[in-house]
Image 1 (cartoon, rainbow, N blue to C red):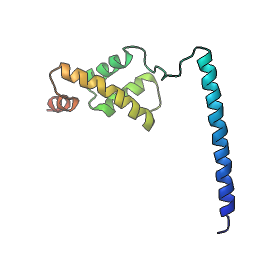
Image 2 (cartoon, rainbow, N blue to C red):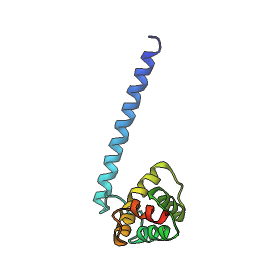
Image 3 (cartoon, rainbow, N blue to C red):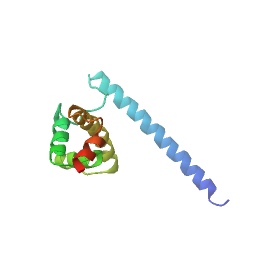
Length: 117
């Protein structure tokens, strides 16, 4: 097929770029490690801040992981990208379920159903 050779060339070019970038990343990671830096995940929320915001959002009537996550993101002044909403939803869910269990509910969904009636 005409043009296939160009596509194969472009693919090889991109693979070469990827290998170069991966090598650069490995060098940077070694340099960070040598300087005593941590390669672990960065702390996004200060200790206790997420829990405080989740509880505040629930007190204000936000129900469900998605709504709570959107409120937290708004309070942080962040853009609500799909990836960020998903990440904060997962993090907030743990705190919201803990709060619901402390209040005598088996899950956040039961808490929401009771308060919706």
